[in-house]
Length: 277
Image (cartoon, rainbow, N blue to C red; front, side):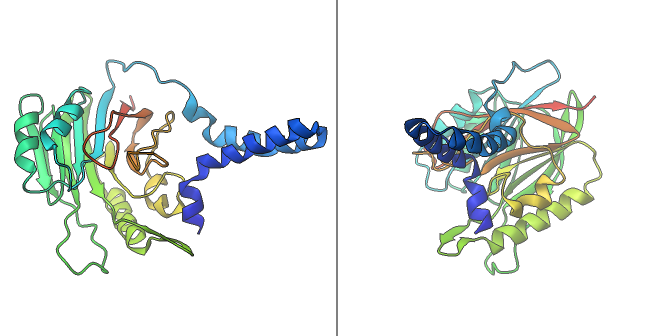
């Protein structure tokens, strides 16, 4: 139940707005004073995310993360939409064998380097080396399952270990989120990040959880998350939460925002990353 509440934590600010309206309607000074505490707490937790971003600097990397959906009927159009953001890196999940040629053809000219492992892929403007499958499969999944990769991007800012991951889905029930598989996969991913020898790391992925969800502590305790931007990415028709994430180590995720909808049930997110000096 805690994970379910934390998934929608920013929306609790609406309760403060409703209560504020009632306090003003009743002209209750006591109620107004009492509302200062939850209003201050919400502003402290989420107010900074509402601040505008700044233009990318010469040392910044722009990255795009998108669950493209295995039911997407326009993979070429989706690939063009991601490329139009002019990022350095494009990470995708739910990549199917039938859709892969469309992404390869559309992205080849601007993103000559790529690696695909199972259903996740990364396209890059910069050379990639040491690409390999990342094993984050929970024990409770018996069928073949490859939804993680690790590679090294050779950027103008130096070598960066780039991880792309798609954690298992969760289900909402009477007791909250049924998330044991997602949580186990997050733990495995966290162990891989701890063992990573390169100092600079970027994690891109559909993590099926928000950065406020305690179940993602194995990741958020090791990596920086966005300083600015709510970027609710799911569901695309009426976004309620950002479960598509960009995190980094030895770098700042300065701003994250959504891109226009594609043929997926997720919105793409783009983030500006500033490597540490």
